[in-house]
Length: 426
Ligand SMILES: Cc1cc2nc3c(=O)[nH]c(=O)nc-3n(C[C@H](O)[C@H](O)[C@H](O)COP(=O)(O)OP(=O)(O)OC[C@H]3O[C@@H](n4cnc5c(N)ncnc54)[C@H](O)[C@@H]3O)c2cc1C
Image (cartoon, rainbow, N blue to C red; front, side):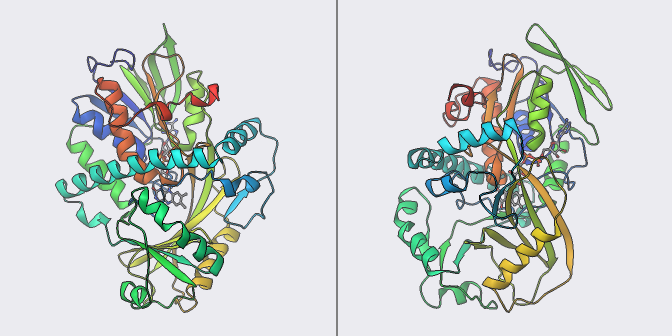
């Protein structure tokens, strides 16, 4: 099976990376009859994976690319201070400079609108796949669909967002302004100190890392082999084919290889002589015991770009977009900035003990569209990476597209805007 031939003659596919993207590639390939092995350097659902400590939003909210006209002024290293929600560390890095060049190009209104259309299509498809999976596999408790509140602290922020509601609705997202009293009905125990709020009834979220662990169990039962603590260290290439993979636990000779290694996809692809335009964007989250006055549904603290999500008896708060290289170190400073934002929007929320401090690396492309499809000159290599700030929501559809490309099926979406080498031409 090769992407060029588009058949499933040799069903032996190795997926590198056991985050949400790798697992959905494995699911969709297995569904089509392929023998699939997932190789994961850590433990499934372990803290190294960006998929493990995030806020898990998978509804129709959040499909806008990060690059947008108002981000142009912020696309310079050092343009904001290090604690702000968006930060680019000044440093000598040719890869970052190249990425920023493409990011600036993607900041046009046309590019942002095109990106939104592609991403909302993938998110909708992804939500349908997730709903089917969770219903069929007794995982319904791990996918909740109570809608999402977008809270605005300032009049400027709220007015601007309210003005864009009609455009968002026209784009297929059922957003509306909450009238007086409606927020109290949605979150009766919570006191907000905000100017106004919007609501998207299609807000849904996954409980992570529990979802990853359960999904891993389901995949193993379906015949997918998942090898944890197995690091891919080298590729042997002959006649434009990967003929052997070296790992810390032996060698494999797969028919095809899918790189789904999140922020590490760049170093993985480099082993195959392929260059990906991808930057890690660090985020933080903290998980605490559920305060009595916490909202019972997800809330986005819009100006602060901080998300809050109730996870049973816990509350997770996540956010921060920091281009600081491959740095996963948890910063107390940044966690403090998250707590400050929560205090500004919900001043009466009780402090409860912090159970978990986490940071993860979002694998981000300049235009926020993932890299999905054949990469470089190799016949049996595909990439599924770059799912960025909305990878939980994009992964199911991305996995389906990878499997369709390998199986030679009609893809559910046009794969051209997602092709991994698109930045070479730009
Ligand atoms: C604070 C925060 C909040 C977020 N909130 C949301 C949200 O609400 N909704 C949403 O949709 N998205 C959200 N995201 C983004 C989302 O988490 C990511 O897009 C997604 O997890 C990326 O998944 P992935 O599988 O590509 O990468 P990962 O989950 O990082 O998986 C890649 C895996 O590959 C493994 N690997 C790497 N190299 C090798 C190798 N050589 N050999 C073997 N294994 C290897 C790694 O160990 C890793 O486990 C958030 C991110 C952050 C940081």
